[in-house]
Amino acid sequence: TPRSPEARIGAIKLLQADLPSQALFLEALSHLVTLESPVLDQWLLDLYSYYAAVGLSKPQPRLRAGALFVLTRLARSHPDVALISASRLGPMTGDGSGGGSWEVVAAAGALTGALLAALADPAQA
Image (tube, rainbow, N blue to C red):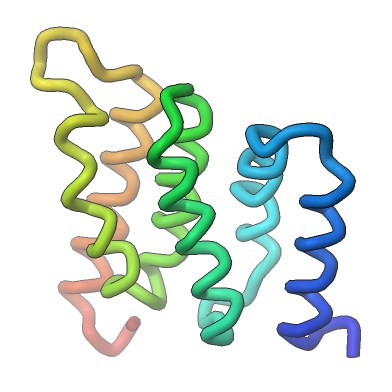
């Protein structure tokens, strides 16, 4: 069916093949994740968390912020997955010397808030 995890993964792979760059694909994923249900199938969870990790490794602040947005969406129902990437936040947000992009700092704040909310209410996860 069109709503099955397999069909959605197939559509995401087609999108990846049709977009001219990985950067554009990573940005598209940060929008696609908003269309997903809060609790993801394991395959979709793996796909989004993998590409979030890829986005976090990119030097462009916009891609890093998009990856953090994906993790923020995942944190609501899958805080354990988002926590795995949280250890990378310090170097990305800067040390207070102005090295962190405002986009990344804001997205890191949103992720931190989502993680705190999910961990404070285990019934939500």
